[in-house]
Image (cartoon, rainbow, N blue to C red; front, side, top):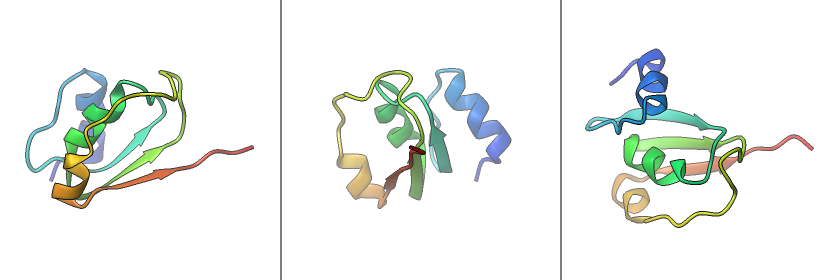
Amino acid sequence: MIPAKFAYALVTLDMEVYLPGVDVILDNIGGLYLQRNLNSLAVDGRLFIIGFQGGAVTEVNLQPMLARRLTIQGNVDL
């Protein structure tokens, strides 16, 4: 397992994390980062989408979600 302080640095440096991946990602960018974030998660990993600075519409391959039992959850304060 990769400690959280290193996981953030790896994702922001535009690098994909390889196995075992990270447990949790907080994504405030969205857009093109969604696929990269899915690829960086470990088995049973969780992706929390908390913003759309990079856009709200993107195309994504959902195969990693099924293969590694990933969870995507959104949150917004209105």
